[in-house]
Every structure is written in C-alpha cells, then in structure tokens.
Image (cartoon, rainbow, N blue to C red):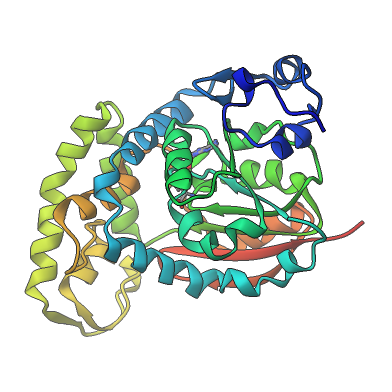
Length: 346
Ligand SMILES: C[S@@+](CC[C@H](N)C(=O)[O-])C[C@H]1O[C@@H](n2cnc3c(N)ncnc32)[C@H](O)[C@@H]1O
C-alpha cells in the first residue's frame, strides 16, 4: 500500500485511510469529500451541521476536555481505571479481541479526550487498531494524550457518531463510555452504531439510568438554567453546588431513613448525608482525595450538556434486541447501566 501524502495524513495511520476506502496516494482528498469529511488542523472532520441541542452539548464537552488539569490527577485516573475494569473486565482477557486474526479494530464512539479508553485499553493498546471519534474538538486533546503515552498508531476523527463514515461491519468492538445519552437520541445512536460491528463483534457501553423524582426534577431544572450560559459561566455557576457537596461529604455523617418513601423513590436505611443528597436531591460529587476543581469537572459533565437522557434497563434491553445484539454482560446501578452486547451473526 502506498503511503498517503504528508499534507493529508499528518499522523493519521495508513490503516485508517484504507478502512475508509482510500488506500492509494491521491485518493484521500476525493474519498474524504465523498464521505462528507474534510481535513482540518491535521484531522479528518465531518462537515455536517448539528441540531441546536447537539451543538450545545458538543461545545460544553469541547470546553471541559480542554481543562486537563481538572481530570488528570493520578488518584482520579486510578479511580476511573478501577471503575472501568470492575464493569467491563480486564481488557487482556477480552476473548472477543484475542480471537480476531491480525489487529482488531476498536471504535471508541464519543472518545472525548480518550480519558476512559486510555485507562481501560492501555495494556492492549499496541495490539489493537484504535479509532477515537468525537463530535467535539476533544479529539485534538485525545490525539495529544495518546501521543504522549506513545500510542501514535491510533486514528482520530471529529464526527457525529450517529452518522459516522465508517463502513458497515468493519469494526470488531465498539466502546462508548458515557456517550450515547449525550446524542439527540440514545436509541438512535445505538441503532446507528451497531451496523458498524462485524457479526460476533461486541458493543461495550454505559448509559445513564433514570433516578428518583426530586433528582430528576433538579437535574432538568439546573440543566435548563445552564444551557443559555457560555461554558465558562456554567462552570462558575456550578462551583457553589460543588462546594456544598464537599461540605456535606466532609461532615461524614449518616442519617437513618426510617422507612421506604415510595412517593420519592427513597429507600429505607442508613445513608451518608452527602449520598442522600447526591442520589435523591442533586448531583454534587464528593471524594475526599479530590480537589474542588476535579469535583466541579464531574458536576459540569453532568449538568452542562443539554443532551443527557436517562433510561431504564428495560429500554436498553429492547434497543439491543432491535439492533440485533444479545446482551452478554449487564450491570444495572443507581447511576447507570453498563452493557457488553454481542452482534448476532446472520
Ligand atoms: C462524558 S464524555 C465521555 C468521553 C469518553 N467516552 C470517556 O469516557 O472518556 C461524552 C462525549 O461524547 C461526545 N458526544 C456527544 N454527542 C456525540 C455525537 N453525536 N457524536 C460524537 N460524539 C458525541 C462528547 O463530545 C463528549 O466528548
């Protein structure tokens, strides 16, 4: 295979051009155009126009992923790594990637800054062909972070995952951690991505779960307030809430909910006061080893994007079925639902 011209390749690996159907020098420009992409600042980028809600969501994430100092602490990364392994398992043991001849293609749909992907896949990164796709400029941050870790063979594309110019049945696994619910429709995003999987391929994803009525109300209310603000202003507006979360957490006291409050979906039992607020009133994240900016980052991630749909486990099961996938592994928690689903052959 001849190598793509340097003015277009700019770090994008040849295998990715081949996957897009442009393996010969000189084909890339016309192929990109045919796929609705253009080369800008060294990466292929979609030229689609988004809905207003998707554009607002894109901009909030573009902003937050630039703020690397608020999510790259060693303890935060270690916490995320453990969280991911607990839900998906250890990537060295993913038989569905080992059984593939050659290097399996892994699509990180909504890669952001590659935060989760780097934490989960680093041990096998040089044994896979990784594609990071995101609608926001976070892909540029992801590319830098992968390069810093020595993973220069990864490919990145700035595009909408509901309209990705990647051929059908070309991908061995899709990883979409905390993304599908940030599109205009969680279900449509799932249905748009599943055809990209080869038969027998796996779709690994996490989506938000619907909460109790007060939390749902507060979430909608704050999100509605923030959507007219620029990201910097939204970030600032959330700081008092984050500081309250910190105060509640530092109190470190338990309260007893004497009996189930069915009306508000609050179960009986002893619960830390910060957790009572967190699960049932508003999201104000707290971890004793985190700085206030790191906690604000997590609260911003939750409240700033206007697209943040919550779903039930039943919804997710039905959508997987409609997408021709059978669920192999499912974990349903208060916060969200983690799934590994297998694309059914034939
Ligand atoms: C919570 S972040 C998760 C990022 C990454 N998966 C991780 O776990 O580190 C959600 C990401 O989804 C991206 N996103 C939202 N809607 C998208 C869409 N329609 N197409 C592609 N990316 C999208 C956002 O830009 C954002 O970077």
